[in-house]
Amino acid sequence: MEPADEELQQLTAPPARASNNKARAVIGCVALASTALLFAVTQQSKPKTSPAVLAAREVVKRQIATTTPGAGPHGPGDADVTHEADSCSDPCIPCTNAGSYSSFPTIIQHMMVYNKEATPYGGVIFTDRGQYGMVHQEDPYDVRSMVSAVVDQYDDLLDTCLSSDPTVDGADTCSHYYVNSCDLDQSSRDSQVSCVEACVTDRFAATMKGTIDDVSVCAYPVSSTFLLAPNVVKSCMDPTYDASEGGLYDVDSDCYECISGCMEAQGGVDAWVLECEER
Image (cartoon, rainbow, N blue to C red; front, side, top):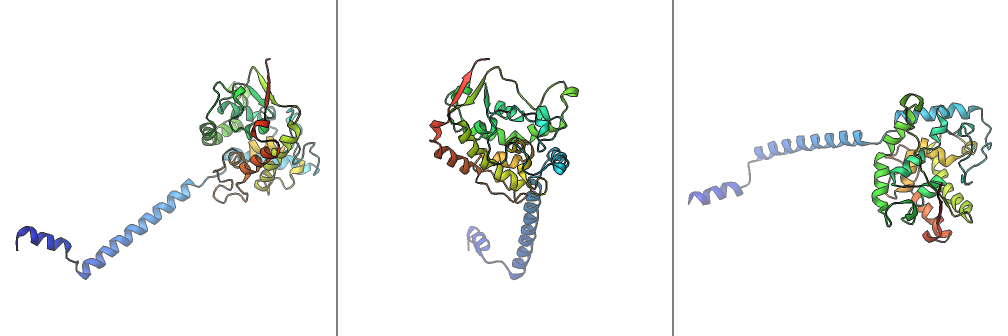
């Protein structure tokens, strides 16, 4: 037999039983190690609610302890279209720095590359499907990358807001100032935004069980959602985002679709129009 043929026969010959057992043992150890590693990675990557958000929830929990259910002037499904109320009067917004906290959505609009303040905040942010070119420098603009940037950076932005003190830091990390402003078309915005806010508030209520047992105490539940339930905000903007965050919350991920249904019922995307003015 030629040396080359002998080598080929050795390579293709079945190994001895002892070698088989040894190989199986090695493979088994590798498999166990891989499973353990995968489990560890999964455990590490599971989202956790940030300490800043947990602290804000505790503040709110104390505030609502003496609040009568149903006292909120804008309960579930009622549109917040003015943003004129004193946010310290809302027990569902932490009042340690409340004036700034209630403007946090302007930071989100800034992250979405808005060059004008667009109100009502939630009504505009959650319905942005690429039709709001008047508040962007570029039209058309890339909604998908815009939303992806917000989802990726939302927690850091919110933590910075909730953890900062403008009187000490010398800057307001919870709001962005715009020279010009825009509003949803006045003729239909109340009915439009009421539908959208109901989609958000229902999921906010599910997320906040144990902290806010009755969201009817909240004056502006959508504003509270931006501060206390980032999981809901992200799922309302991104249809692929898991609102439960791996089972951390008992809430569905259908907010984006719910809002899309509101938009369709109110005349479709083209019916959602902004009116802008120079200041």
